[in-house]
Amino acid sequence: MTTKIAVIGPTDFMHNITLLAEQIKDVEVVPYIYSQPEESDSITRELKPCDVVFYSGGLPYYFSAEARKQLTIPATYMEQDEMAIAISLLSIVHNNELSIEQLSIDVFNSASFWAVLEDISAPQAPYHVMDFVGMLQSNFDLQKIVRFHQSLYQSGQTKMALTSIYSVYNQLTELGVPALRMTDPSKALIRGLLDAKAEAEFVKKHAATIAVCHIIFSSSFTYPDERVATFANAIRASVQIRGKFAASLFTTRGDIESIINTDVFQKFLQSWEEPVAVGFGYGETASEAEEHAIAAQRFADHERTSCGYILTENKELYGPYPDAIRFQRLINNHPEHVKLAKSIKISPANLSKIIQFAKSRQSLQFTAADLSAYLQVTRRSAERMIKKLADHGSIKIVGEEMTYMQGRPRALYELNIPIYNSGKESP
Image 1 (cartoon, rainbow, N blue to C red):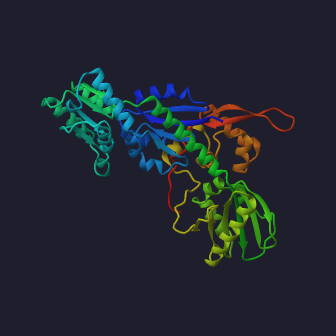
Image 2: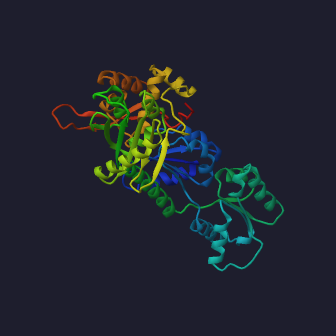
């Protein structure tokens, strides 16, 4: 299965990495280009469905910190290591016939630069080096880096600038300061993409871990019960009744964690007049997950109020939920989403549910039947929503899924709208 990697970076970086991505099997790069690293925050908020986000460097990764809190997928960045610095210095010494002392250099972390000099036994000299990792904790000033290079060149102390930041390079060129960009070695770029792919695959595998939700009710109930059925549908679980006072729901870790920090779980707890004790358990086998769920439920039972605990396969206990947890409501009051819903001609509430559906899935592709089951609407209603999205260009057909029974193949869809910028708020 192809891993879709959203790459956020400047134009030149994107050109190189797009070409190299063709050498990697089952990887698709989706480029998001910025002119300034600060733009990575707004770009991250507008990402369309993908498996992992890969930033061109530490700066865009840092500037997107707030936006990344909303992501439900992993994010990584291209690290500047000793190899990148060494190759860049070797290129300048060889092609421009300049010594390292004649350069002004900015790096993410100067420790890497000094490590290179130590490895090559470079003589002690007045090197002109500036790192910006320390600047990130205060007010980052890109112009300070530009002035650093410009003043050294104009005073005659240096003959060329070597910069790690594309926008600094562009400004120095406009100012007439000879400059070169730090080289991103091809092997390092490929390794970065492979690491991003591996991270996405790990998260998917992690999300597919078997999970059991064990519920003990204070009073008896009769199944089918609408409250239990609605909650089971939200976590895509099969239900097993354990007598008049208990039920076990079999699902996956990803489905549990997609709702545990939303108001879906809180609403389920509040739908019962008497306390409900819920235990979520993860395990390598269904029996292990069920054993952990029962143990977690006992912790919830001690709280004497409606709540839940999670016990992982590594015996890590989390809870109680939902105390002190921020919830993501299934309403749509985000201005951009309200505007989008109006242009698509569907209700903001339905658009919000579709976005939540996409964020909760481990696969980017889905069928009309998948959407119908999640929204608890008829297949025809789901297909009508899909048609409106398709007419607007907000959804696309990416393949077909063969059915096990006779009949026509089912279309596979993928959303083509930003889904990670829905925000979180207190209930």
